[in-house]
Image (cartoon, rainbow, N blue to C red):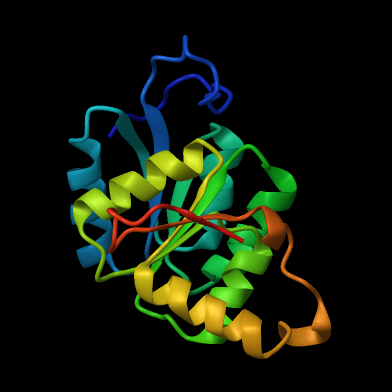
Length: 189
């Protein structure tokens, strides 16, 4: 992990001249998850883990100090949870993508996180390659959903409107890729 680097704007994945690694923050309240995950991701050639945060307020402070490309965000954290931090990031730092990595795959958690602006949603059953793929996709403006999450989201959208009757922001433009079944073509909603 690197620290105290000058602030840079998030990289533009559409720019073929962009060669720098993706700047990533890992946010999880459990040090036993956060620290090894940050270390493993930091060994990936095109990913630079610039911070590890224990809650949403730490994420917001880190992004305000030095913009990043992607935040890998747990949902259930003290002080400020991942859903609120995602909402605030979407409003205050729209160039930063959020990929949720959580143990929760219930309808409300999925819908709340995606409505808040998360570009990806994985369960903690995801492997290293799935997480790396989701980070890269989010940085490129794509949405990646865990296979189980994708199925739950589709079933929920088909059977009931989201809480409050508000449509999911950008639902028609979500490009869905399943991490569990990479041989299947992506599905666009």
